[in-house]
Image (cartoon, rainbow, N blue to C red):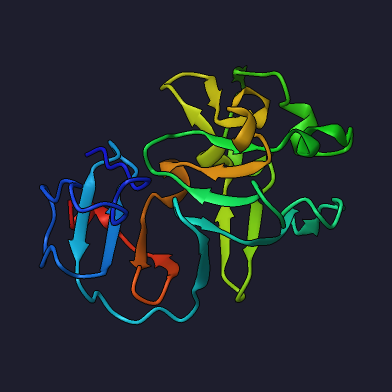
Length: 209
């Protein structure tokens, strides 16, 4: 199921098919599985989340506070995440993870090592070799992205690298972190448009699809 969250809830003419719950609600959630990317959208109260972060601008943009790789916080300029055209956009209409070019300018990081790679070959489990990435958001909410999330296996020893340089994006989006659907697999993601917050928790979405 493909959903355009950029338009959802921002106009009166947005489609409401393939959903569960009252269309008039200002709260909705999605849960996507890892097998084929299908899942459900539920409209209405789906439960209380322990941590949320504020939606700071339209188009589902939130404030990032830091990014860590293998538990170590990246040393980036203080204005990397804050200001016009910055922050993180939640966009399940795409699969890739787009990062500002500044992420790729440090030779000793994961991002430097995959900076111009679309496919890579690897034998064995990628989770045993490559590091976990953690995005930290205002309000204490965090998102862990594991190697099997950003290195997609095609059934052989070849992997598609979903970490993409944001320089390929339109000018007004080059400094945004864009988080595609792959990082939200098996997570219940709740959008509360009335209170302008978003949050998520781990969930087995395959039992719902």
